[in-house]
Image (cartoon, rainbow, N blue to C red; front, side, top):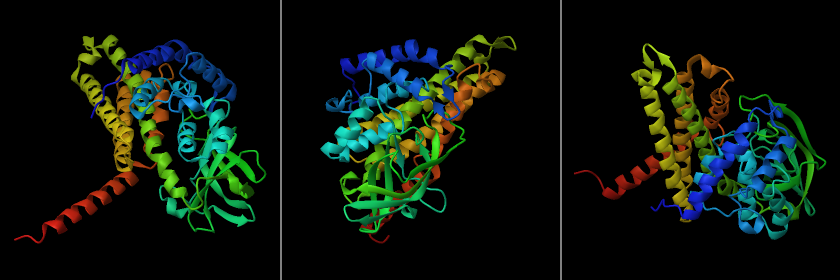
Length: 398
């Protein structure tokens, strides 16, 4: 595996780090941040800064207005962006838009790309991805999908309820997954959010507050979608979901690793200044060991991310590896931020440092894009299947 970055990408990493430090971190206390995410006014201002810096949409092909980075280059740029909660917005590489752009670039036809991908890559509009449903519908188990699509002539009619739909409020495009009667499989549809038949019923109050538009409950009631607005092929929705989810899990890891590094830097700086019991608290083993554990969790997460990115760059599907990366990184990143808060003591639970905010933002990462337990279950099933296959091929013991 070659993890070497070209001089061009080393310079891009350094430029991104300077941009975040000089232009974005000073905006972190901007009053245009709400319990349901930054306002559109603030988002557009951030996007304008990213565009001016030449850093907009690093994950999108150059023909659509991005930088066309491969997964390894994205790993370093997204981590640098994630050092601030506002950084991914400024680079237009935040969720769910980043995953939706990847999906459109891989699956959409030329007309759909021109209509939706180009303005998304420019940061002119936002999108949402409507797959998750309230119980008893689809969550970690997509086979429970209850939203339906029935054909009426050259249209499909979509009915159902989705929830925890990130960015629903204020989005222009919705990618909705429904079980179609034609194939009895899942199909993805592209629809403007202002189309008749789509209602954002409410925006949920959640622990995290970094996603523009928050997380909404969306009802589809007789939404009519033209056949030309089917994304890809009818009945292939579950397959396209994997096209989106495997890289999206990894880019989440990249961004949140940047947040973990930020929390660790704040804690380490404090541990070197704060004196208790006759010396800086970082020199006491109780604190020093936490900082050492942070360093190891950050290092191992970065290696896992780079390994999975390398596989994706080789053309591997890497779904199994992205599941492992998601569990390893989400759990490690949570530990880093949790320890950092502990090192800060009383200061850590206040808003006087960014750590309190990062604590709230990274905790849900262990749940969305598949809870850690579901990924562990999937990994174990694959392991047992492989082990049983080896045992059978070896023959009975003597």
